[in-house]
Image (cartoon, rainbow, N blue to C red; front, side, top):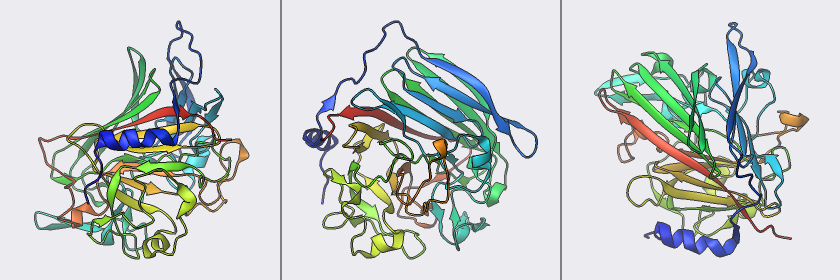
Length: 387
């Protein structure tokens, strides 16, 4: 069935929460800023840096050039209280140990590639198996474990961190030398934009995304089950037992995956449904109902007790909605707070999982002389808290 138009979908969402224009008085003389500090040493002796971007309203993010990781993301609630809504660690050491990709750039290929292989022009490329029989998030040492070159830029009403990395031909099994640039921009309109650019010297596949875990109550402040989410998608890609798409684009209508109207994340997360059981909750790609090219509204999330909210806009055709089902409380993050199951959610804008092996899916092939471009915007909003 055809989904509502973007305008209809957006307008239908408004009654769910009366959006507030602002939660904080602004000093009209205030300006955004960027500060840089050392974040720690890598095992090879290289130094990672931490870049702190702040807009004129006081919204702030700290990003390290190790893995392009978003370490903190501080936003206001409806009462004007600032909280860090991104799960993660206070020091570099936390990110050097195994963790579930907190805040990181994911590449060369976000999400899963079935049986860790794909074929291009008759040549089969074998990747690292780091998720059962599959390859996940770029392999054993994906972009999340690289030290990126960094520079900062200041524009009118915005602060930008530009990260670049050259992935050599054959790295993690992928063909082609891939020149990659990721731009993080925090603007005075309370939006945070991620722009991805890549070029190659040999035909390859690319699918970049970011893996921030959000908790709009504040990181470490309980689970995310009462967050209310709306996803602009009338179909999703069901998966097999290994969480690889079957190739079907299944309607969400009549399933626990129907978020075309706002619903609690936890309302159907334990439903008696085969797909829910396979993901241990939500760990699925949603096929976004897009209109034309450019940025399109993909999702809105409101945390009802604080009124803190997030909109996701993207140029991508899909979005992986993941509800932290494999968090188990063993990781202790910022402020000494543990992260138990479902204490964070991810909205990973992307092309579909396993697209190199699924001819009917939108292509992720990048050829020499062409550019891979993708953009996602997180817009921070507030709504009247529910008593």
